[in-house]
Length: 421
Ligand SMILES: [Zn+2]
Image 1 (cartoon, rainbow, N blue to C red):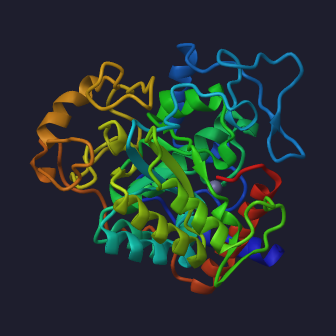
Image 2 (cartoon, protein in one colour):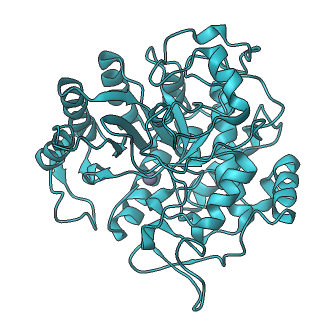
């Protein structure tokens, strides 16, 4: 254990964020600490806090169920904690889709076992989905991350925190580090600044939401379809993860469940999935689902921002727009409030695009129009560091070990919960 930690510390000293000039925080299951935070993020946080935009909800404690508890007397519900994991409380989250529309959210990448077969499928099927990425996994698997960023079929990159920990149990500064550093490493590798967050295990409350929105411009994304595909093991269809729900035993079960989502029902409600790019077994189920969605005539927009015609990134409207280069990852547009995720694009309840509307029209943005008029955008400047060498791929063996460790950690945490993200 000590040797491993020493190794990580050495790597950290030599791996600097090209966007900030400072070392990335140590990868692993610990939230980045306050001393790692660039001044611009903390200044923005202080400004937002002073404006009263971050509620004084106490830091929660993890419980035996893998979820969280608050001190007695803490107000719950919509105007209190509104914590999704324990209350299933939503507050302007993207947790559903307009009628007939489908988007897929794929969590826990990048990983060698999962991301590579997923990319093969996504390229073959010409589908772009949202990948909610773990910052530490990017650090460890930089070569895989670069394949994801440079894939033939452009993929949508979102945030799944640096440490894959329960964000409601973290201090404001830790949340700042978990979200900010994941955004930063994605920006450093791809040039794109994420606009969408999915919280590990679905544990998020109004305090964490407020930091995500008001400091970083991040939209929170949940899901309404989950087949426990994280239970599957690499190379075998048998689930063998401690704590996996009894209802999710093997590949057949997961594949049948996911294909079942794609079966048209009488009301044709749209949906947003929870998948995991962690094993080739999960990829097999995913492929069958993608083919069923296409066969059954859904409006298969693929990635979450396309459900309502929203910007894909904080610095690019469409997936194929050249990203605007910025000095830091802080948002330069006003936050778009999503009050009704089932509102059809263009309908009365659809989100108001605010100061993005001009960019949207210049980009020719429309739902799912990921390949049209992409570079006509007036907002583009030079692409940032798309091939930067911020990676730490000097030790493949180390990356494999580290990746395995994180996957085991995720599985352990996830195993305690009723569901996993
Ligand atoms: Zn996860």
